[in-house]
Length: 351
Image 1 (tube, rainbow, N blue to C red):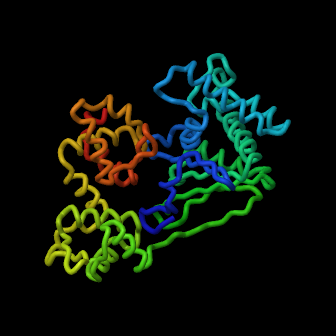
Image 2: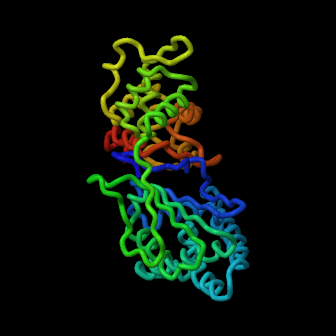
Image 3: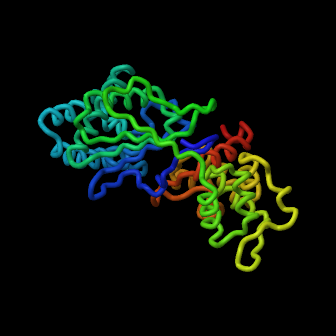
């Protein structure tokens, strides 16, 4: 985690949600504050693409796709694990968003559905880890729902000899303490505190965003305002550039005289100012997308927009408001960009 409201990224935005490398398989689950009441939502995040589930296909097509992946998964498993996978097949499908009519998942009561879904996740992880070492990354872990926390706990029980890493990235709690998952079983636990950027690191971020060298005055101003937080550093530089507060002098970016007083003092004000300076059309598109959550489906957003607004989805991407995960899915660059866009709307519009 990072100090304040930042969080550790470790370049995970460059990671795909499901990536098989030469030495490990890596899956990433993204929690969302808007839907953190939904059990196992972070696991659904990567199980949907894993089982090739698509919202634009009918249930029968998704079922065929699920069965194809599930059969290949069974071939990885040993005898015991194969029995478990077969037993929990409908629960894996349910987590991935496919409810098979008449299946154990479909008819189970709430508690049984949760218990068996957690067991299904464990059977799936064991099968994948038998192929090659397996990394399960859960981002924004401070928003894990209670059921997902139970799943994490369960994935540490009787797993000492399974080549699995559970990697949780998160912000600090409001009181400055790092978030923890209680009742972890007998597996080693390591904590990596990213802390603040060094002065050299902060300057490197500033120069990367601007695409050129900066003066000591610019580096010092951004360092003092952003306090070493990588995301705040990036957003403050974008705000300075957007305001026209930076000028090029002798091949270096410098800050205009008396421009410092016009820059908002805190990061929330910086982010709101960046959103306010968007054109009315782009702002409307960003606000509409914010209602869908941190991550959203571009096809759903397109249906919510007028035809003449759809081109502004790419404009918002060029403004570094969000980035494309794939051809269908977009992700707000940070929850602190999504939240102000959501909160600046009146309740009637949100409904």
